[in-house]
Image 1 (tube, rainbow, N blue to C red):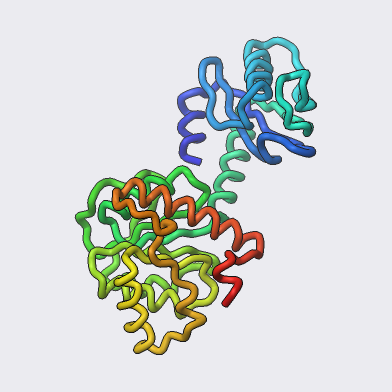
Image 2 (image 1 turned 60 degrees about the vertical axis):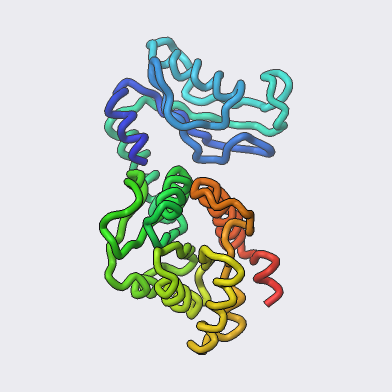
Amino acid sequence: MATFRRFFQEHPASVIVTVAKAKGSTPREEGAVMIVSKDAICGTIGGGQLEYIAIDHARRLLSGREAPDQLDIPLGPDIGQCCGGRTVLSFEAADARTVEALLSSLTATAESQPSIYVFGGGHVGVALARALAPLPFNTTVIETRPDMAGPLPDAISLCLSPMPEAEIARMPSGSAVVILTHDHALDFLIATEALKRDDLAYCGMIGSKTKRATFMRYARKESLRDAALSRLTMPIGAGVADKRPAVIAALVASELIHVICAAKAGRLPAERAKT
């Protein structure tokens, strides 16, 4: 949303292009938005020839030439896109009313996005925050130390907490928890609190098979049942043996997309469904 706001400030003479209807197979869903100015664009409605047509039409409107405020475009061989569906695009001049309406809609959408909580702002935590920043999540990094491995992107929130495990109780249902702190004992404490909840979409902890076995012994002493322990993902990132922070971050981001989308659709991953 901040990107669109900045674009409107820098390019006040713009046209808002919205996917008003999407029928069949289309590059983007209804509600997808792109902003077009004389010499720049922000966002995308799917790329390809469809987007070129939209940009040309928007700039025709910007130039003052007469043109319709909607285009009904079949996505077939005629425009070089074989999706086979049909897209209706709407075009609106970016004025105070339309800009405020769009930003309000984007804000509401952002606030309804799934929440991800990354415990630990070390090298892997910061790399994961950077990987998650452009994705449709509300991501918060939780740390006990003010000095972290690097700055966080603007889209990422930071919570400095002396008792990070206490933050678990405040999380909305459907949230995801990724545990990457500098202290194994703290990891175990956070994971135990997270696994006591059965309404989280994901609970993952960085570590090896040995660390997992150690945690399992600890968790059973804390009276966690097998059903709760089955909700732990460890190692995270599909168990790929690459310890570079950026690689771990990419793998975990992919894992989170898969699990959270499945949870939103009311489906459990196969390993969860068996328990």
